[in-house]
Image 1: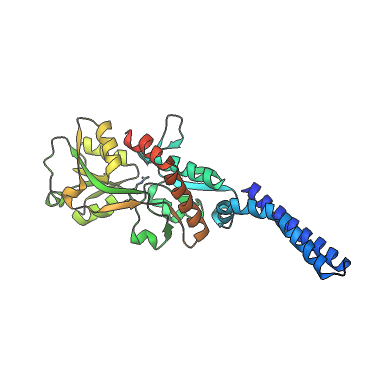
Image 2 (image 1 turned 135 degrees about the horizontal axis):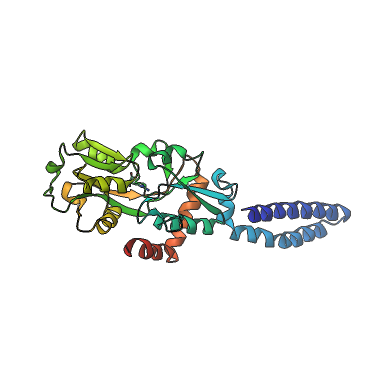
Length: 291
Ligand code: ARG
């Protein structure tokens, strides 16, 4: 960001310098024709920095966003949600969302820092502790009251994980069961429609552990993490598609401060570019389809 700001400042200075020279030259010369000539010449000279700035239009636009002004995009996540975010062997947050944010940061010319926190704290931390949240977060009307969302980047649906020998199969079977969920997720909200026995966990994997231990009857969680857990707990659990229970599709998007349209434009623009240049599909293949 600093480089761009410097370029813009330099450009502004160059232009005022040229304007100053122009008027001096014009007043020193009596003929209007000469004055016009001088002005034209210098307008032409001034084009280079203007053009440069136009090339960096997207970045310059980003600089108007308060969230990007310091050159650092702080991304909040909850790295307990493979393949979208998890802590890798080096203790770093990785996954599809993290890779997507790193790519967005590259496009915008800002450094990306990740804050790993509880999922339920993400929305309220936007605008203070974090600039944006990328956490396989479903766009919901309730969340939209506190944050804005980018254009959706992935379609999801809740799945049900049950013990391998379970005969749970229909929505009726979910009634009054003990349902394990990750706290504050859409799976949590759905579970509350079926039972008052919702066991809320900060880490989804703990819900699945308790399913295996017989402490909960089923777990409601997004499709892709459900498939990852099915592999992780192979033979002990099975997954059932959400459509079987009438669960509606959901859309993931990046959450950001309300009203920061410069940031929304910058992020949406970057995602569009990543889709157009094939990076987005590469990340889907690497992180999601490889699982
Ligand atoms: N899509 C669900 C939601 O928005 C679950 C997201 C959980 N994400 C995470 N990183 N733990 O509520």
